[in-house]
Image (tube, rainbow, N blue to C red; front, side, top):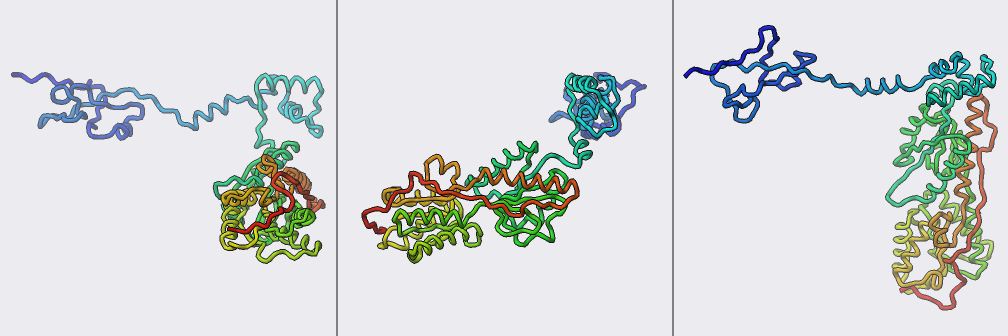
Length: 436
């Protein structure tokens, strides 16, 4: 029985025997074609690439038929097309019937440009820009004006617990930046110890200046802080060369609160301070001690302890202190170094069945949003004002830098604090309670 005739490729077609090659390798031989074996070229009508298909011994490989393939469009080509379609300054000038210099002068509202632009021409250019949907090139404008109209905030965010102090100062920065016509970028560090390695990279021209939020730098920064980028700090842990600093009166705030507590008749005031290497925490301890000294009251022994500046830290610190002092007199007031610690102390007291403020009063420090929600007694720091004033100082430094002038503004700005007597504070209790 005669074998069926084998289909042969046209003699004028270029053939490529690449049955065993991947398609992308075949395409190396043909720039605009793909090659696929024709259906039925295997045994029993199976294609050679199908599972179980075989080719009779001695038979030449089945030819591959050229199939036109679409040429992929590269992302760079697509983005270039988008860029070409965006209206340019030349398009606006052409639509308004003016030169590019006149169009630029009209759009920038320049008074110093060599092109004299009448009000009628200016309106015509602005109308053309609106009609075309023209947006000025921010990079080109920054190069021309030597500023980006953007400022940056550098902060550390550790752990899963939200830092309401940072968020409220940040809100003040955003408010101040908006009023000054600035956009804002946020730069984060894992720890301030890494600042010398990472902070200079933030000064690469993306922003005109930086605000460092509660920096804890290991040295004064004279050797590694970039001098070409103006900087301002908020609540710096130590004076830093070249930085103007905005802070609140930590020692004075704690002094006011403890003086008020002593004035109400409280005598056993436990202060749950922050970490001992934190300057702000130490200043609040100094305020606690000064208030006692000026009132002629000696603080009870062991009534200053330390804790991380978190709810969990405050809860665990008070739990340990209470567990170690069973049988001793319960404090009348617990004064947390910040609102977060104070909330943790409230949790620890309630877990032991103690009432706030009937059994123990609790006061905090900062007057954050959470404290305002529950009407906690606390020391109010002007958190929004800290952020807003930091922007004001930074803008003064940026303007001086652009004019190549020395900054003559304040290097240290200290804002006052005030006490807030809320629902977690009561007068001295009548009964003498013992820690159980």
